[in-house]
Image 1 (cartoon, rainbow, N blue to C red):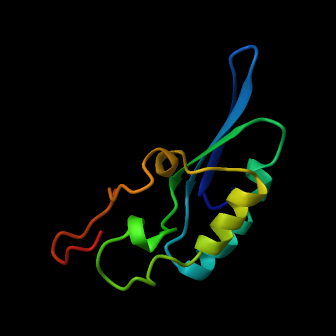
Image 2: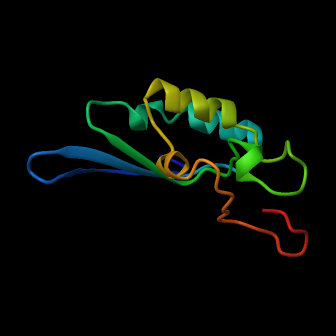
Length: 113
């Protein structure tokens, strides 16, 4: 994309074709919602898609966040869920670890993760 937030590649092993899209979603909630809504053009098509990257978003505060304001970081999650629903995308890590509370980011001084 023009902002450098999406990079996609289509791969083939000769018999199968699939697409990998890596994203860096905005930190601002309103921008994040628009960003997720704009991903349709990248994940649509006939080939299977792997969508990965930094979503800057918490989908489920019960298992994806610890401490801090429970509403912060959830902006955009509705648009992300809609994208996943529209294109049958799944969170493969969460599917394999439905109750795990493991974090890729944390703020040691406050205990927020």
